[in-house]
Length: 81
Image 1 (cartoon, rainbow, N blue to C red):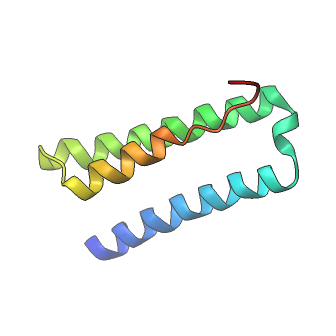
Image 2: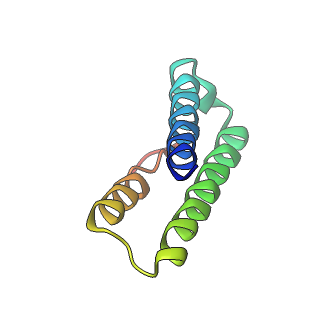
């Protein structure tokens, strides 16, 4: 059941990223309010997964930390730098 849970969580995030990619492909980012709410929801889900991974184990693997920080550094934004 542990492997089923881990693979299901990975598939859930894969679906989220595909959904964001679909939104970028079809230009949904032009609706800035909807897009920004979606990004806030994405970060909320990522933060929840982060806490669910860190808290039960009490520590984090280097791989887990690398993946999470890389995902958080790739923030989709609208506007100029």
